[in-house]
Length: 149
Length: 432
Image (cartoon, rainbow over all chains, first blue to last red; front, side, top):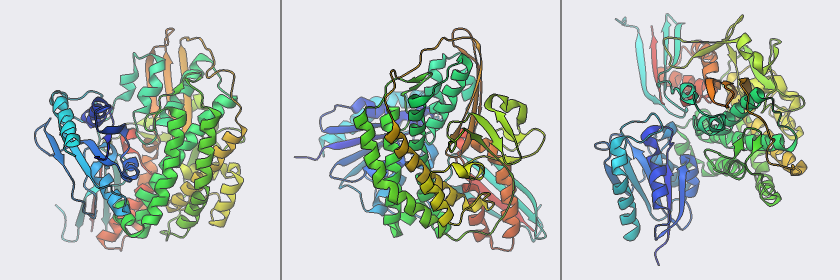
């Protein structure tokens, strides 16, 4: 039987499209194959959560990864880089940094998948139109990952 | 045009600070000429955003200004509203607020010490590269932080943006079982917290001494978290609601965050060092002993030793949380009844990185008509610049790469939360 997935949305809903992770995480709660959902993920907390038997799926806003609203799914190849790449997450420590930290600590689970949604605006409390329009595609991307696990 | 002997060093990002800003230092002939620390993230307009909202919304809205110190924002906000409505929250209800605050200090201080600041002292680029060589050290930091998160989760209802605090008290009180669970977790990390003080006390410290007017809130017989008065090392001792009589916020072209100073004097500093210098006698016995063993005494005048002070505060927060849980007896109701009325209220509390002042004006329906939020990092901007000037002068003969590291480290002494004050710091060194 496939391991269940922990889904973690990363970002701050008060910073515009940075909040997309929490919104998508809320929408996939209860989906078959997913047994734990964390909405407002603190990236430093994610490093701790990236341990144990569960597969982990992170949802985060991206910047510089296509047109606004573009949904990208990838399994990061972890490389410890001298200066952590900076995602679009609050406080400059995003999903990739969390994965790097977990890798450095030797706690990475077998599978970590990131679903990224390219943001357009990181101010205010609303998602931008292109990101709002991408929500269904992001949810579908999560379902696809879980289904084929 | 720069002359031949002017060198400019530009750093893409200064990471490991919370938010976006820039630093430029200029030296000529071996002397510091100019230092600018600026915050260029657009102002976040939370104050304007709050106008027209009901007071019950303010704690949750302000909590979202920062993912690192939401409790501080909530606490200063509810204190200001309670001041306006003439409500006094004390006893066990207040103790629980201090417990929640201990949670935030534990998580924020552990994060800053281990993942943001320790790499500077140990010669690592980041917490991630530090973790690679010293996983046990970083794991200990994360273990401590996790207990802070757990306190915020249990008391606040959620880990990141707690939602359980309201004007007059709480929506829901924790159960004894929940508190006993927290006590067990706290007991488990107490040795880690003590080990943290011992560890950071061994870090090599740049030799810089400076004096500034240190400012913190004060509450009788407590190391300050929820303030009643505002005190300083230059003799200030005022009720929180006289804040605007003493402090002034000014717009400075180079920064999007307002600069604060004391009206009749100059810059001042808030934060762990200020709290320690004004309240060292109020630390828990265990934290006071650890401070003594670490060679720390008030006043602490080396800004780099703020990491040691932060560790002592971390231990204090663990001790304080355990004491609060031990003494807790459930109050009759989760909140005190109150009547909304028109007026103005002020509140101040000690965010992990320093005093956070809020002032609100409300109408008779409890709608906010005006809001003022003075975050700690905005208040510390001038002192950060003063330190940069000293550090630059002391290290002016160093090559650019070493100079850059010590200047960045100097900024991180303040654990600046720039996104609160208004994301990455650009550094430019220009010297001749």
